[in-house]
Every structure is written in structure tokens, then in C-alpha cells.
Length: 300
Image (cartoon, rainbow, N blue to C red; front, side):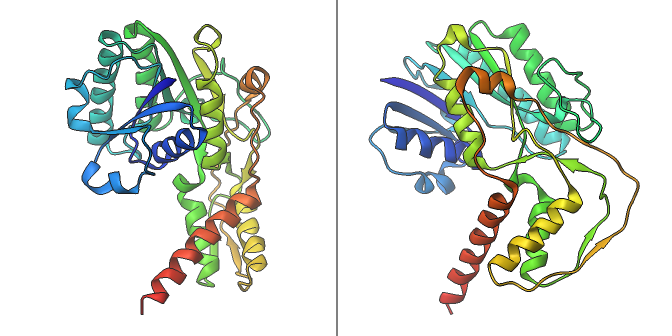
């Protein structure tokens, strides 16, 4: 039976990875949590799951580990948080080098690519030109792996997840509250992915023999939509769950930005393909928010 070690298992992506490995049933899982006192109870129970606090990670001998999946990293543009994440990753690479760990899969980001024109796609050989501190930090980590990792390493440049796309959250909230949606960058294009598709993509790479894994993969939906299209879709999906139509105001700031990755390398090698469409993703967000709202109301 294989063993995987997942950092950041208390985070959104890490939690879903742990759950998927448990459901698959053929893997021992070592989950490293940033805040175990808050998150351990939220993980599914399984005799194949071992949970460790982050504070014990570098002093524990984990035995043989087939793959370490590194998801722990600060989000956003907070420089102090990103600096801590880079330092933590340096420790993770040292851990992989000195312990019986065969490989590491590092979760990177599409944000390290240069911005594109609408309709364009970038493959794994595309120009790297991060325009955010987060993208730059992820690029630094990829270089740390190349220069310092003595084991098999792979970086997955992943599209943004729907839960991290703040504008989607705002659009859904506006529809639920029947408030006007204001779109200030209608010519900005985004490529957003559901967490279920992301997990399946990561698992498809983890299942590859080490000799077949590449150093870099793009992982995303392979399509892009304008911010205005996302707003219109939020409105349309809201009507399917009996919410009134919300007005949309467009204030064009003139900002133009697009990102979309060519994921054909991964698809050709693993047959992975995304299953959740833009409207399905938004429907999931409505269902989750409305479910939480109903639970809150039931308490009173």
C-alpha cells in the first residue's frame, strides 16, 4: 500500500485531497495540519489516516513515503506570510532529501505566467513573468526545487479555485441579496476551476510512475470567461434556484487581462479532463451558501 504525506491538510485543497485518498482506499495518508486543534475533527475518520501538527513535521520520522504533496502556502499578497511559506517550503525540501520520501508534488500557480490576450493559451514552456508577490513566491519555490531537491519533483501550475475567486463570491452574494452587481473590468478574463476537478488532476499525476512524471504540469479548465460573463452566469444560475434577477452595471476601467493554460500535456498522459462547467461551479456555490443560511435559520 502506498503512503502519501499532505502538507496544508487543514486548508481547502488539502482537506479535499485527504478525503479523496480516504475514499480511494488504497493509500495510507499522513496529514500535516497547520492548526490541528481547530481542524483535526473536520477530517474524515479512517484507520488509514495519521494526523500530525505542523510543529512536529521536521522532528518526526515518517518512515517510507511514496509522495509528499505540498499544498501548505500563504494565500494573497501578505509579504510576511509569503516569506514564512518560502521558509517552510525550504524545510519541506530538506525533509524530502533526508528522509525515505521518494518524490514531492508541489502545488504552484498559473499566476506565474505572463498575462495573455483573450483567447490565447499558455503551455508549460510559456513565458514566466509573475505580476503578483504570490506568483513570484511560487516561482521562487519552483526554482528551489530545481536547485535543491535530490528526489523526483513535480510542480503543478494550477488555475484558481472557485473558492479563492473573490469576485465570484461577491457575485453570488449579490444575487442572493438582490443587490446590483458592478463589473469594473469587463474585458478581464479568468480561468477558474472547481476543487473536485483539481483533486482529480492531482491524483492522476500522483498515480503516474515516477519515471513518467514531468517536472511541470498545467492544471486548469482550459477555458476562460470574461468577468462580465461570470456575472451574467451568476444571475442566470440564481434564477434556477428561484432567486430574483439582479441588475448588472458595467463600469469599464480599461483594464485588460487574460489567463488560460493549455493542459494538453496532462490530458494526453493521464486522460484527465475537467468535468465541472462554469454554471455547475456557480450552482455549487449557491447550494453551499443557501445550505449554510438554512442551517443558521434553523437554530432560531
